[in-house]
Amino acid sequence: MNRRSLMKLVSRVIGWTCALVVAVPGISFITAPLRRRSSSGGIKQRVVKLDNLRVGEPTQVAITGSRQDAWVHYDEEVVGRAWIVRETDDSVAPEETRVRAFSSVCPHLGCVVQFNSERGFNCPCHKAFFQPDGQPVSEAELGHKNPTPRSLDDLECQVVEDAESGEWWVEVKYEKFEYGLTTKVPRA
Image (cartoon, rainbow, N blue to C red; front, side):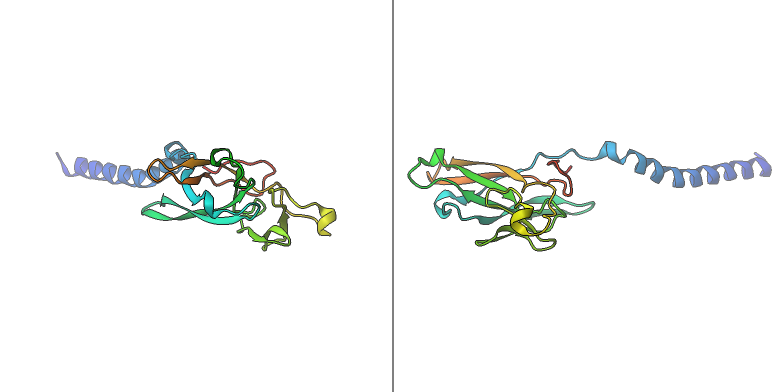
């Protein structure tokens, strides 16, 4: 191999290396949606004992779980909050008790919804108001336009009996939803 052939080979290797340095991140960016993990479908968790809920009085509960960002895995931290509302009293058998769960995230712009016994659920960020059943308060009642595009996001919930202790718990399937839309769309 002479000097000229060696220089051609070295130039080609350097050229291909430079091309790969540019191409690999570009291809990775384009194919990222194909490699993205699908949604887990939510976190199902027992959040509060049925005996701790009062009829018609919303109770906020923390939803814990693990999450992962690009590099780090976080175990057992608060991933969201939910409002639990018991609709029937103790005269009904525990397995037939009606309980509703709402996401504490405002469907308008994603702020945290609070509860006020006089005004119901409200979002302090943009003055969105909701009735105790999660429906938006009408413009006539508020005196201004309610900015929320939809009602509070319902979460699946059920009353379950603990096999070991025999206590009745409220189990919630927590999901996050896109905000700012008129329909409830789960986030990926």
